[in-house]
Length: 119
Image 1 (cartoon, rainbow, N blue to C red):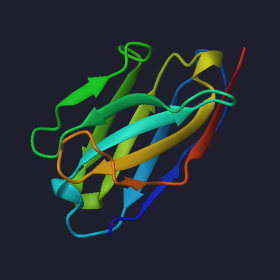
Image 2 (image 1 turned 120 degrees about the horizontal axis):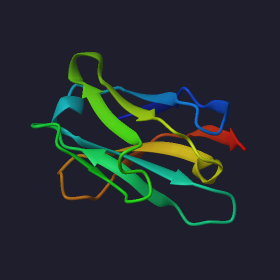
Image 3 (image 1 turned 90 degrees about the vertical axis):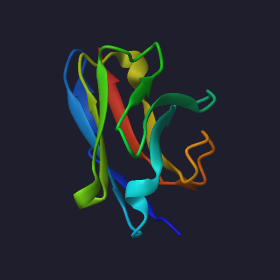
């Protein structure tokens, strides 16, 4: 069982930066691929990006590529989402999720953290 807790959300202005953290419990965290998702009001949940457990290879949605960076610190059981050049359309609740088998099936989810970007 893995528990995930996101933090770092808030209200920022367009073009600002923000870093989200996702703290994980569980001794096997460093063997899980991890992902970030977001959901804006009235919209479906959207994939933001992911990071593998072994090589820390990252994948991003086109909408955030070049602006967002995912990293992980296995010693701290934490995954980060660095968000730069934020836009109002990035406003959403951001969730981190764990993919135990590295097959893009995310079995564990956090409760999310709100990010609001004003214009």
